[in-house]
Length: 543
Image 1 (cartoon, one colour):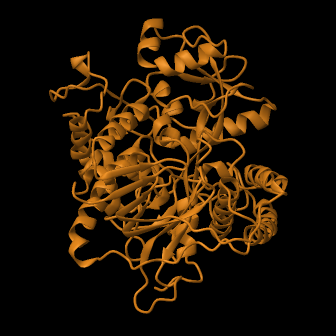
Image 2 (tube, helix red, strand yellow):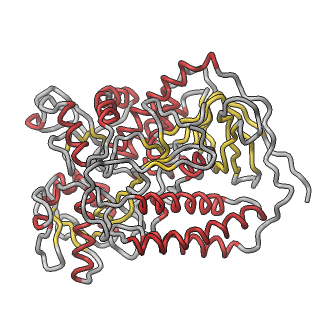
Image 3 (spheres, one colour):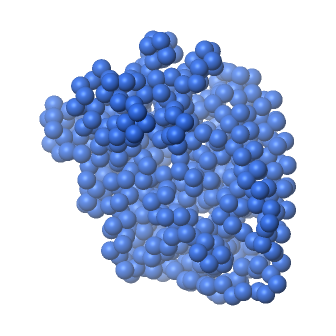
């Protein structure tokens, strides 16, 4: 087989991922740096664009940093790192101010009674929060933020936005057999347009690839949420933490034609009620906060009622509110549901839980630094300690901005001490052939997501986890053999990463002998006296 030359690129900073975290990092770096932002598909395909609710921040005069911190600690089930929570919340107002300066069109406040501090934007309240502190752009906050930041990035001549680029693996000094301290030197990246694997060399590399909710059969996430950054960092020698905590959003639209459409938590914040098919409310039986309880409690309650009654879904009802209020506050949900024949001003919405957010991830510090020099992880890819055993609503976007900006400051401080990597070896495709067995990828993909949903879902048991572990190991062996013999494709790369992260999730879940937050097991229903993180270190980790 002919060895084809692949392109080589050099940038000061390589950002893998084009969502809120990656764009915030790039826009916060000095304008003279050459920056590449990679997107697996089109730029808008990440989770940020689809976020509906908003960003949690201390903005109201009656709210305090301490209150936001305490709410987060309570929702996190005793596992949040208080220093990370405080760091994030203390920087929340300046992060929002930065977004406003970028031009994000947040919804203005038309009711001064909501806010006595002179703040000009509407704040709503979501589950787990004791105050109105969610700033939003109607019910399409993610799209508003993403479109604004993307437009800013397009205006920067130093930022190169590259679509249809799928990162295959990180390039490290150790991988190349170089002496001295290990360091990330860039990444090998599949160009989907040419089918070639390109070499990206960079002084600094940031993983901003989002979470891994696509590991489950039912998810609110877009197709790209495959845990790519977590898997690549693990293979590069980075520790991961708390991957057993996978948040299931309580309310995804249940309809045969609806794919992954999330019904924002803000509906419950504005008074929507969860009901059984007979119209009976059930949340007050599970928690005194009822519909405003944290997501893990609400998702488990829905799961319980569905299994108890043998029903396909429950219902979220906001039809008791004035129709104009519903249409003006939730135009996206109203329009989307109307397309499926559901008028939410008059009818309840059929909903089910779906995998939504990966609370664990690559271990980082307050600057987003991983265990490998020159490698950063920000956003859902990372584990900062903010979310603990259960992420509180709307803290995730805040984390993207705070840590993206913090990483930018740290990178800026290191610029003079880090030079461009030497010429890196090209990707070697001389020993592989085109696959004529892609049915194997499709079958393994489906099998993985089904047993993760059945065995590592909202409610777990030791036996289910053992079955999942046995199956994922067989899959990993099959995938490794396939990967060694055939040319890489997006589907193969994603399957390889997803299976790796699934194994890490299963191992993490098996190590936690208690029920805490999002990890609920029938074999260990109680809490241990001491709350500890589940930290996994790869064989290549050098502590």
